[in-house]
Length: 156
Image 1: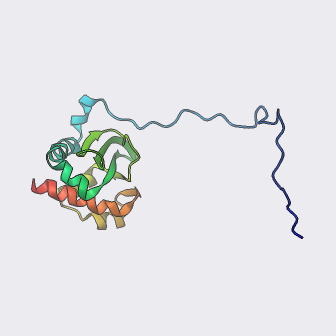
Image 2 (image 1 turned 90 degrees about the horizontal axis):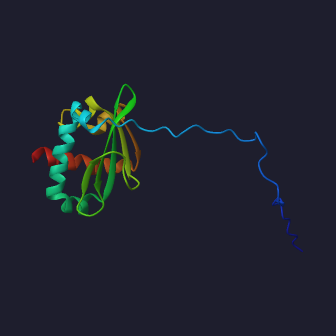
Image 3 (image 1 turned 180 degrees about the vertical axis):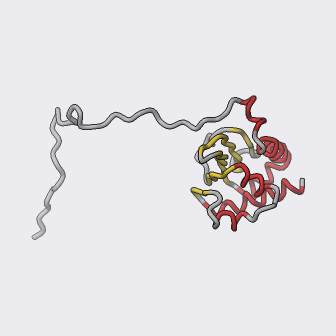
């Protein structure tokens, strides 16, 4: 009554890509992270250090509330010049320079002047995002939790 038609190709030993069939890719693009001595040249560096101290003090409470990993790619002239990770998912929380060690829930790509205005409360994050001043990938709604973290830090 029903007839099964097997459309899967049969692969024989020796069947494989022929020479020249695939293009060799170059090395993966790496994000340029400045030398640690050059970190202090960025306006955002003292802010991240201060947020790091704040997270060390109240990180356990923040982990319970936030439960997310945020990666912030700070840009200059369209190129990522600095990366910071705020891990509020593991242990008692952590902030460190560089890409997220575990997959980030949300990645923000943001120019440094815009970042400074956001953390200092001079710019509304939702309006800035809708105006295209920065980009968000991953779980966009978690950005609201990060906004609360920055507001708590500002009170601190």
